Length: 436
Image (tube, rainbow, N blue to C red; front, top):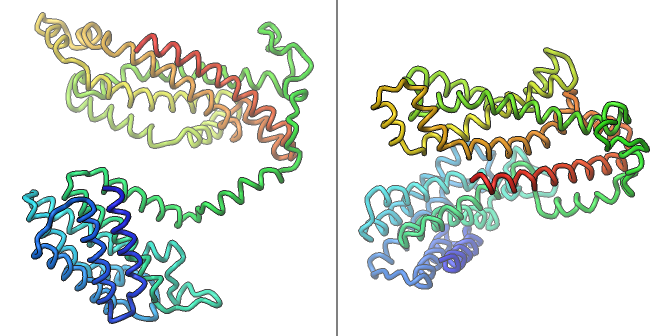
């Protein structure tokens, strides 16, 4: 069904170029022909009456959309978007009737109708975000503020990507078709809003060769001339190169052990299976959601302010970060555990927490250890970033060298970090495979 969707979408979009001709009637006629062609290519049988309903609905909406859209729009605002959405009610009704006649539930027909109206409501903001629709308020020199064929084509593309995809997905019982189309649309819209473009990406990637002092990486400086790689020399090697790397690993170790250890009882309290009562479940769940809301970098800023810059602040930040991740993952694992052993333990007269320890903990223990190893990998990477805000580790060295534009040293440190993280990750993967 992907090919029929693309062909129908292409015809519907090209028909939008004729939006100003014959008050949108030609757009509707060609667009509905494209939709019916997509039905035929997708081997969706429809009667003459159903084809007429679709055609009349599309033609009616394209006609109304040209009536509600001024030739010189002042601005793309909420009121204009609502008017444009209401203009597509005939097409939405026609799509709903078509789906309802397929013996699909009324809720499905309603959902398809709402997808047409919703896509029409998003059409004008999307065109403005894609820098195609130029209202008077955002007019630039040399651009016409007339809503023309190209603007109608963009709106047709948006409406077709959501409305037509939703119609085909419900009729063919392929929800992935509509979901994929919506995701593609949201990606295009989000990219346009933040200024993300493929040509811009290629241009900026090409600029990497213009970074000063990047190549070759200065491994001589990064590794130093001392035997810092020897365990017994860790505290006596270079204070600016080797020891911060080791400090980064130490922060990750401390954060992982304390964080995942604290998260174990929190996870059991945050599960409906093992929580002793409803109030304790709600309180614990709220606490976990609270610490998950704050990102690790912000935790580092908070602790760097409260306890001072250095590795202690970084360790505290990653303890909360590890606690949040482990509590979330493990509580969901506990929810999926077999309740039978717990019920059997309680039937013997065992107290709640001893029963949980003997009946549920053995079930989730392999996952708990595997999650702990995974969190340790994350903490290694995160501790590098936290050093940039003064939370210790190799990150502060990276920031210092970057501020002096010594990108050859930055590159050498990044490569060393990559090697360390890769080795740790491979060891962790091997251990997780044995556990789960």
